[in-house]
Image 1 (cartoon, rainbow, N blue to C red):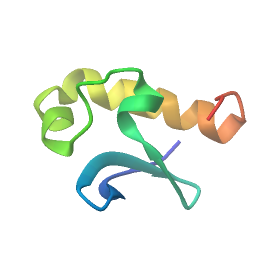
Image 2: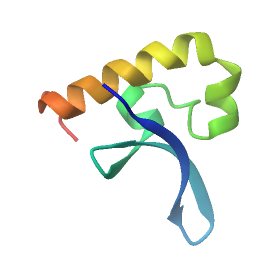
Image 3: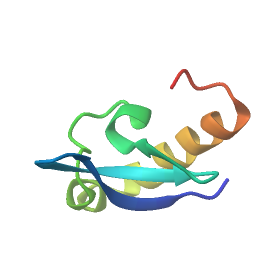
Length: 68
């Protein structure tokens, strides 16, 4: 499963890390279940763990097994 890591505008005053799966953007911290991953910098600092967690989340989203 492929995904794109990105930053998106969540509100007028907040940007957050997201992953794009199938043309839809999902909040990275929420889909991975790790609140600290709310920005791309934090994800990249923990990339060894994040790479697998986000790929797993993308697979769940694509298969319809995620409750987002």
